[in-house]
Figure (cartoon, rainbow, N blue to C red):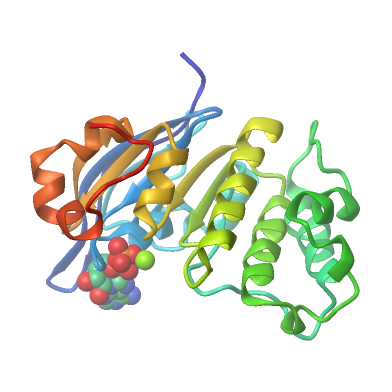
Length: 251
Ligand SMILES: Nc1ncnc2c1ncn2[C@@H]1O[C@H](COP(=O)(O)OP(=O)(O)O)[C@@H](O)[C@H]1O
Ligand SMILES: [Mg+2]
């Protein structure tokens, strides 16, 4: 079995009386491409916040490459190789695209040493398909290009584990498929572990090899796409509304 990169043990996040994440157990191994799906408000983003240090869990433990990072600040997670994107893209709109990438390389990336395939800005721009836009202000490129740029900024921190929160939201069908291909390349060519939250369930299920389903803060399924689409609780809670048929995933 590949190395265990991140283990969430009984992670619970409460906001007052609301339990947004309810005793979630999940493991992510080196080189995995895992999807997380579930209805709006299921706790997907809050779970990402918890496992990237952005949100302190109410209880539970987070082990990153065997180290207990529970309760640590976000930069400890970055130093341990965890990078994430945000549901609402956060780019520096007035800065050129290339300078946005440089920011990650110079600041966040300085914590991490060792071999990393994307040594410079140019190789990241090439991977995310923004070479021609390098000198444009980030605010002037299309929303789908801004999504790609946000991924580039995360890559610049030299992660081992990349957390993507709805990077295909608001994109056209063709752009969603391109995004899925970029995600595949980051796993296949860079060997990253990628965890991908997406509302475009049918696309996601065609590309991931494991999917975790959250519902009301709880994990109601964790298995292959084929297993998950025939899970009665998942169909009841979510998939019944989301998809009539899923091309390429046979139940
Ligand atoms: N900072 C917060 N304060 C209070 N409630 C929150 C906060 N963040 C999220 N929530 C609530 O937690 C639940 C889970 O939200 P979220 O993790 O964003 O779900 P998802 O990403 O699956 O749509 C929702 O009911 C949401 O309103
Ligand atoms: Mg969310």
